[in-house]
Structure formats: structure tokens, C-alpha cells
Length: 394
Image 1 (cartoon, rainbow, N blue to C red):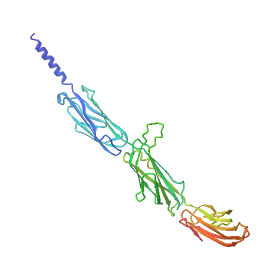
Image 2 (tube, rainbow, N blue to C red; image 1 turned 90 degrees about the vertical axis):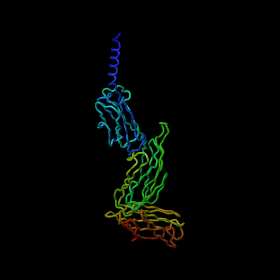
Image 3 (cartoon, rainbow, N blue to C red; image 1 turned 135 degrees about the horizontal axis):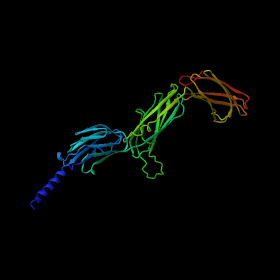
Image 4 (cartoon, helix red, strand yellow; image 1 turned 135 degrees about the vertical axis):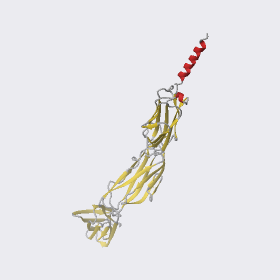
């Protein structure tokens, strides 16, 4: 019986000695300084590990923390108050015990739910159920898509519409939405209309406001959110040379810049070195008239001849397109006008030459013109197109 206490003492000593290696490495905390962010934000992630008990007698060996962080969280700086961090591995080494913190400073450069996964590994970790932690950072996004429309070709002096539409195709409201519109020096602003927001011609900023997203869960619906359209009325400067000129845009809102390319189209303006010229004959009287017109156009080395024969009733107008002419083109118009009625009448007609930038009108009035085409009024007019595509009678 006297040997029993000695045996129990040995058993207790064995138990105490065996438990000295039963260390537990675990995550004390894992958090980020913000749980929601937007593209361009800087987020700080702090990971703290500890051991139980926190003394040298219960140290762990070959301890590391593996960090798997989405590439949309770009690590710009990593700092550990114990051990070293490199390429996703925080190495704390052999004989580690106590608490240590790893700080990761990250740049948000993507949207969605950004995650960081962290795993503790140690050779003699007694409890591996507490070796994992995860952090989530929610980056809401808007997928702003825009389209722009202009005429396929433009002439100097032409007034045209630039129409741009922005639509929210994302899963969050796009708040404080703006579009910066940069017009080339070859165009002049005239006016604007907008279905939403206001446009400042001095700054070129279209302040749109909020574009809501489509929150209907019906998958058969068109997943398009709210849209807004801006129509700018612009004018190509009369002295603009032929060439391609771009309207560039930049769209932003309070959430992300994910769709900066979709939302920022560059629109090409193609300006030709010609201008559309028209001849317009109008009959402001109550007398039916017949007009026979011979036109000769000299445009550079090209000579164009055309003839027209038509009647104009009371108040009628006839428009003749002379074509897209170059600067310094010469126009000769030989016009015969008849009274198409049976008795003598006073004949009056207006001859208008019109370009994109200018128009000139001549009015001819002749009294007592014999009826039924027995007498003609003959007029010859000459004009040229100057360097600003203005009409100059010569």
C-alpha cells in the first residue's frame, strides 16, 4: 500500500508534462476598417493571432498564416509586428507564443464582394477548428453604359445634334452621376435639351443626378435601369477644315468606375471640305407660273450643267439641290419665268441660294406679263461660295 502515492504522483507528473505541448494557435480578430467601399478607396485589414496559453511553455512550431486575398484588393503595404510577410505568407516561425498583428493596407480596384481568407498552420497546434478567418468588403457597382449619335458626315457651318444616352445596367443606384463632355474647337455650342439633369456649356458638365437600377426579380424583364438623354445642338464652324474631330466624354458617379470605358464613348465628327448648296424658287403670288432654269456650276476642274422645267402654283416652293460644293465654286443661273394663266398678270418670284451658313434672296417682280407663256422674264444671276461657305452674288 505504501507504493500507491508514489505511483499516483508519477501519473500526475506525466499528465502535467504531456499537457505542456498542447498549445493552441487561433485568430484573436480579423477585420477591416470598413465593410463597404468604392473603387479607389484605401482599406486597412488587421489580422491578430494568439496562442493559448500565452506563455513560452505552450509555444507552437513552424507557424504561418496564409492569406488569400482577391486581386481586386491590391495590397500596397504589409506590416507585421512580429515575423515577416511575403507573397501571401506571414511567417511567425518556431517557438512562437503570444499575440501578434499583421496590417495590410489595400487599394480597392474592383467591385462586388471582395474577400480575404486567412489560415493558420502550425506543426503542434492542438485545435485546428479555430484556424480560419474571413473578411468581406462590399463594393457596390453601377454598370453605366452610354451611346452617342451624330450625323455620318458634316459640312462647315452645319447645325447638328449630338445625342448621348446614359443607362444604369448595374445593381445599385448611381448617385451624383455626371458626364464631362469635351467638344472640339471646330464646333460651337448652340443649345441643349435633357430628359434629366442640367448641362453647363461653360464647363461641359452634364449633371445627371441619380440613375436608379432595375430591382425587379423577374428574370424575363429587360435588365435596364433608369436612363437619361442629353441632346446638344451644335454648329460646325464655317472655317473648319476637312477632317475627323472627336467629342470625348468622361462619366462618373458616387460608386465605382467599373464601366468607365462603357460610359465614356469617343464620338468621331467627320467634317468634309464641301457644303450643301440649295436653290429655292418660291411663288408668293396667286398667279400660276412656269419656270425653265439652266444651271452651270464650276467647282474646281469640274463643270456641272443641269436644267429644270416646272410649274409653281399659288404660294408654292421648289427646292433644287445643287450638291455639296467646295469653297470658291462658281454658280450661274439662267432663269426664264412665264405667266401660265390666260391674261396678263404681275409676276413675282423669289430666288434663294442657301448654304449651311448663309442664304441670299433675290426677288423679281415684273408687271403686265402676257399670259399663256407668250412672254418670258429672263434673269441671269451669278454667285460664288467663299471661304466661309457664304453665298456671294457677283
